Image (cartoon, rainbow, N blue to C red; front, side, top):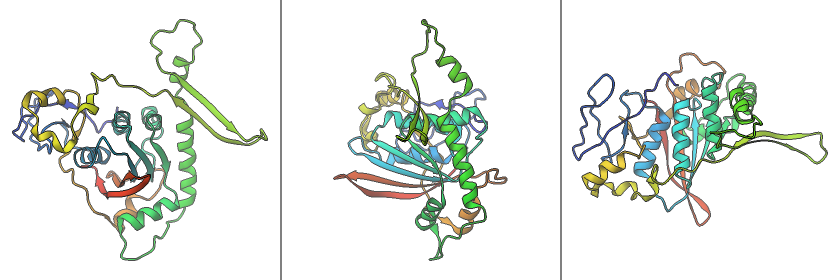
Length: 312
């Protein structure tokens, strides 16, 4: 469990935008403004950049009758909690296709963080390490560069190769306990409802391995647990009655962050410091997420918005 997070606490909101009397273990008071009068709120003011994006995207952009291409350039790969939240979001919203380019891998030696990255891939996200090309693209699109070219730092390519190899190992392998639990050849194995498929792709000559990987069957959420598809568009919830609001907040997992509005860009020094692709990066506790959202219209992507979030 990620130490930076506490479990989400459910709050039934009213038309009064100030929410108090949080039923948490420490009975602390919390006052937040919810842009849509419903949602989930963190008792801890910390809100990671990935969840800030989801809150903003759901409340301001998402429409159930459109398809979206979302691209992230992030300074750290998602933590285990964020990976699960993003994966759940993708599982419920099949009209959103997410590509993640990470400058560095966050706690890559911990099994739950590795599992979080695999879960993202199982739900359709593409997870990659930023190469020189992605750093250059991010520099040109999201940095106040004043016309200056991106200057790669020492060992950028070497670090990319190391991190890319590590990510490949993470995404194509199973944890030991997952393998021993799910691949046991007992004819009667209760509770094993997931199917894993480990694959290897070779060229026809039989000597060159193209790709190794592992896939898991997609989880289908019952309608009574996740009736998001039955909800109105995010921008129209203000007309709902109190009873309907209380019912919907019991299942809707939209995150309300303290400052959900994105920034327009990054300063050069911020980019060079926080996006440097070191294997072990001390002093970089702030995570940045540069995003591009495109809507597919007539089979062609059209830019909807782009910006930058950082963890609260």
